[in-house]
Length: 229
Image 1 (cartoon, rainbow, N blue to C red):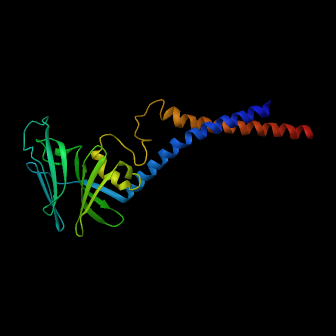
Image 2 (cartoon, rainbow, N blue to C red; image 1 turned 90 degrees about the horizontal axis):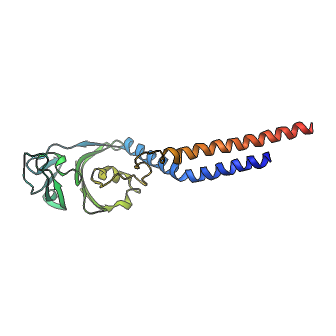
Image 3 (tube, one colour; image 1 turned 30 degrees about the horizontal axis):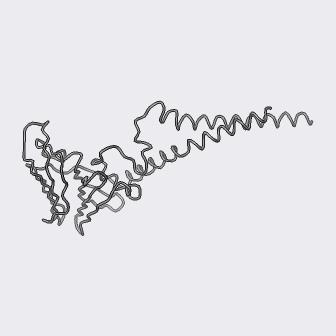
């Protein structure tokens, strides 16, 4: 009877551990990727815009971002406008239907739709001005402007963020909702159910049950040896 009870405890513990493993592994992967990204890259804001136009010279390149919303003094005012991104006088992409804040003359003017940032790589020591824009429901565009060398233009969707996590770092401010690198394991609002009961509670309980099961087995083996002697 005691042996059967020990096996039952170990079996229940194993099932709970197997059920908890996917969520725990997803959390661990998100934390690991985020730490790697933070170790490698840094971000910094860009200088203010002026009257709906941001002109920024970076090395041998000139970045220009403009809209047609004009200026205003009411900070609550929102105006729909098309935003045009030019590099060295050439239009690289147009962001349609952007909610512009005319009273703002920094990157907050296009907050949630377009992000302008310095992106530095600690490993290579290089710095680029990167423009990230939401081009559609799941479509994004980025323009990376280095101090010297060729400008890199990329268009991609959400499915590529896991393979190239630095893209997530660049576009996270233009995402419509919080999104993880490879999963949303760390993006859910904490509650008693998740992650307290599952997967933390279930994984802890699984370890306790497995330990109790082996302890019960050890106690039975000790009694058997005592009986033989």
